[in-house]
Length: 326
Figure 1: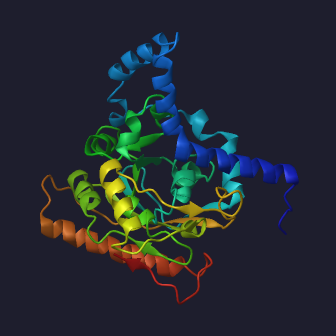
Figure 2 (figure 1 turned 60 degrees about the horizontal axis):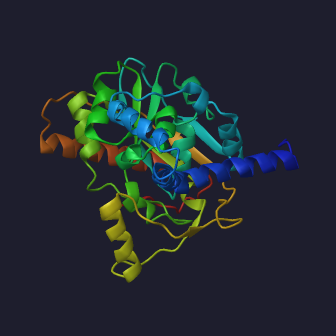
Figure 3 (figure 1 turned 180 degrees about the vertical axis):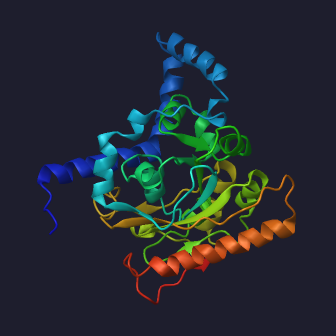
C-alpha cells in the first residue's frame, strides 16, 4: 500500500526539483554576470584571486576531477528522486575489474534520469553495482564558467572531451563507468511526450573510444524522460528550427521552448525508470578500423533496441510503442 505524502514532503520535493532546474538553466549565466560585476567593485580582488586559481586548476576536470561525496549525497537529491519518482533498474552485473562506457538515452530536456541516477547517490547505483563508479560526462564548455565549474566538479561531473574520457578509462584504475548522453543537443530537440526517438546512427565516436581503451559498452534507457515537459517542436527548415540549429552550432547546446505542469518550470510528476542493460564485450584496439567501429556500433544499436522492447511494457508503455533510431 502506497503511503500518502504529506504537504511538507510534496513541498520539499517541488523545491528540490525547482532548485535543480534553476541551476541547470541559469546558474552558469548568473556566475558569469556576478564575476564581471565584482571586477568593477571594491571586491575586485576576489575574482582576481579566483582567476589565478582558475589558471592553476584549469585541467582538473580532464584529470579525474574532484568529486565530493557529501554533494552527491545531499538530501535534496532524495526529494528530487521522489518527486517523479525516479528508479534505477539493474538487468546484469558489471564486473568491477573492467571499465565501461554507458550510453544514456534519451536526452530529454534536462537529462533528469541520467543526472539523478549517475551524478547523485539517491538511486542506489553504488549499491546495485558494487565497486563500479559512475561518472556522467557533459558539455565541456560548462567547465570554463567561473565558480559554476566548481559545483559541477564537486558533483562528480566531467567534460565530454577526449582527454577527460581517456583519463577516466586509462588512468583512474578499473571499475569506471563513464556515462555519455549519446544523442546530445540534437536529441533534446526531438523530446516530446509519447515520442521515443534517439539520435545515434551517425554517432560512432563513443564506440571508437570503447575500442581504443577496451571498455565494454552498456546501453541505458530512461523510460519516461520525454514525458516530463511539453516542448514546441519546430519543423525542419522552419525559421525557429534554423535558429535552434545555429545556436547549437555556436554554443554546443540547443535552446528548447518547453513548459512544465506547474509554474511553467516544474515538470510533470511522471515516473522515470532508468534501465541499465547488459554489457557488450569490446576488445582493445589501439587503432580500430572503420569496420570494427561499424560492427560494434551495430551491436550496440541492436542491444539498445532489445532493451527498449523488453522493458517498455513494465515501464508504462504499450506494446505498440516503437523505438526510432535516427
